[in-house]
Structures are given as structure tokens and as C-alpha cells.
Length: 542
Image 1 (tube, rainbow, N blue to C red):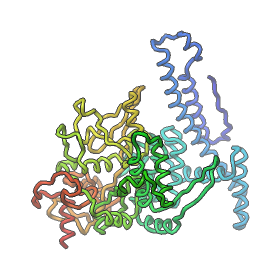
Image 2 (cartoon, helix red, strand yellow; image 1 turned 120 degrees about the vertical axis):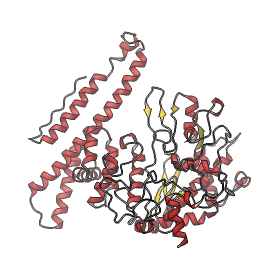
Image 3 (tube, rainbow, N blue to C red; image 1 turned 135 degrees about the vertical axis):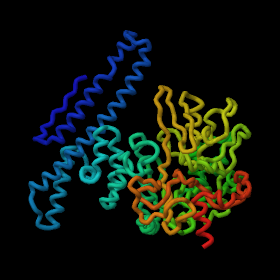
């Protein structure tokens, strides 16, 4: 396959280099494309496994093609941005708002015409090209290198709109600069499907800049509504725009009722059951199948920084299956569910939940909650299934000697749980910090997607200056060598710092065993309390 790309760059070294990069990738692709399939079928091959080699070449070709498409998208972005800039210079100064609007419409129409797309799509492309070339240089370089896709770049341009330049630079550095003060944890952007990358970007943005979240949430709540839209084939769509916590509770309750209806003789799928349950409940028609079921409580898992729960800070909470919510909403959800808060018994050395080993196959309720917090979703690559609809899986089966502990457990949705047992897709071991990754039947490894956690913020006035052996920070700026372990963008102490700080009550502070906790031993003496525990104790006693 011979492919050539010829572009008159007009002296533009940057554009010419980008085009050359794309051409090089196309040449690389031509080298891995398989010979004609007819030759493979005839068995004329020097390789021992012709069909296996063909399959591997196809997958390798797709990998290279994805890089070619990304690099081509980067070239398109640079060309569009350059054309917009040149057009502005050629047209000269504008005399007023009317002329500026006319020029913008003309620019959009020209780009739409040459690309054969609608003017709306052309307008979006111009905006995204401007953002990437002026504010997101690291992301644009990653796009041109083929390490992220065009969809990833669009996510970043969209999620940074409305942020000031300093915050845009900080967000981009977090995900694309490994030398950043607090780089992203977990899978790199290009290893995440775009929808998962969007969740990570949005979650980090809301945690870092909660000052705007409360205001935006209040405005969005005022816009809540129900919508009706006719669909083809005699169907219609009903949608509800609601606060995230409320929507998650509705979804989880419909799922729980639907699962209760499943069994021998029930032919409806879970999505069909959810729809039927929602319709029946809204219309007040319980029917015999719903009347025979107990009404399950809507289960919503909320993870809130402990000082935010106490009102000391305003860090957002995290609603399982949705993402960040304002601190005020998180406190309300915690208050409404105070009777079902859990604390986890952890190893004081590293904060990991204690292993149960071979003593029990069944998971204690606290460990189930902890797995939901660690994994955040189905662990299969690209799957976003909510944890309330997932199954706790022993990675090495119990009957094969697998233990009940954090390194041998993972959340997996029913679909991918079946795939694991029906194919050669295999999970890799987990750790206290990382969910399991997966290895495909062809031997390709897909690493675990870790939640991108942010260290909690501890206000300087709460730092014990003498009892911890650490100096209370005098400002929000870090020391030059970061010797205190403080992140550069906050006054908080990382959970994995050498001070022994560890999570207490990761999903709540409610003591006792009545809610299914691990057995809790005698209270620790004050000298054994972690730094965070001492800070909380001091605050509550004040």
C-alpha cells in the first residue's frame, strides 16, 4: 500500500512537520498491513500459524491506524487555527460588533464548506482548535504523537472552558506532565476511553476548584425538569434532569427491584425490568410482581473527606456512580444516611483493609463498601457500570485456593463476570491501591484504572505544631524539596505520607458493629492515634 500526503505548507514549518509526522505513520502502517488474504488461506506463509499471524497483524494495524488518526486530527487543528488567525489579519480591524459577527459567520461557513460539515460542527471545531493551540499545548502534542485520540482532546477543551488560564494550565499539567507537583494517578489519558477520561477530568476540576461548584450546582438545580420526546416505532422517551444523588438513588432502587424480579420464568432483561419498574412506580401501578417484593432502600455510597463532613473545609464529596457533588449536598446525603455509615478496620501501617484470608468466603459488609470505593466501577477495560450493580469476584477462585482479601478481589459487572468464565480474558492481581487489570486472549495487557484521589485539605490552624514532629506550614506554598510531603496545590497532607496518616472511617465515622462493620477491638491509646485522628479529636474537643 503506497500513500503520499502532499501539502503546500507555504513556509509553515510547524504544519509541514505535522504533515510529515502523519505521512511517517502512514508509511509505518503500510509495513504492517497483511499480504492478500487469499495467500493466507492457501497456507503460503513462512510463519507457523498463518491465521494467528494474520490476527496479530490486524490488531497491530489498528493500533497504528489509531495513532495516524490522532496525528491527522492534530494537523487539522493546527490548520484550522492557522487559517482563523490568518483570516483575522487579512481582514484587518473590525469596526463594531455587527462586523465582527459577520466575519465569524463567514469564517465558519468557509471551514464548513471545505470540510463538508454543518456550520455547527465547523463552529465547534474552530473553538476547539483555538483552545488547543493557545491554552493546551501539552494535550496538542500528545494528540500529534498519537498517545491520545481526538475525542480525548475534545474532552479537555470542553472541560477547561470557563476556567482562567492558570487553572487550565494546572489541570493540563496534572494529566499530561509527569513532573507536575501532583500528577494524575492511575491509567494515563490515552489508556482510558474518552467517557472515563471526562469523568476523571471533571472530578479533578471540581475537587480542586470547589468555589464555583456550589454556585453552578444551585443554578443547575433550578433547571431540573422532566422531558418527553417521541421516538420511532411507537416508542417515546421520558428523561429526568435531577441532582446527582437523587438520580443515583432512583437508578439504584430500580436496579434492586429489577434484580429481585429476576428468576426462573422471568424473560425480561435487567434494562427492560428497570424501565417497567420505573413506569409502574410513577403510575402507581405496583402489580402482583412488585407487591410481592419488599421495597429496597435506595443505596447511595457517598465518600466525603472527614473534615468536610464536619464543616471545617468545603471539599466536594464523591457520589458513587456519578462523581463530585458540592460539600453541602454531600453533608446532606451523609446526614440522611447517618444510620448506615460504615467505618473500616485498617492496617495502621499502610491504611489497607485487613485481609480475611481463607477464614471466610463471604465478604464482610465493610469490605464490600471498601471495594466499591477502591474500584469505583466495573474493573473491565472501558466499562463504566456502577458499583451497586457489580459483583464482588475472587480473582483466583476460592475453590482454587484464592483468599478473601484486597489483593484477590475486584468489582465486575455481570456481563464481564460471565465473559471472564466463558473466555480467556483474565484479571491480574490487585493491590490495596490498584484494582485488577486485565489480559486479553491475545496477550495484550490493559492496566487498571485507578481513582485519581486527591489528598485531603487540612487547614493550617488545625495542625499540631509540636506533637507530630512536623512544623505547621506557615503558608500554602510547599517547601522547595517538598520534604513535608505536602502537595504543591493545597495545605493538605497526602494519605501516603511518611507521618503515618491513614484513613479513618473512609466511608463514615459512625462507630459500632450494628451496621455490619468488621469486629472492632479496644480503643487505641492517644499515643497510637494517627495525625488525622488527633486533628479530628482536637477539633471536636474545641
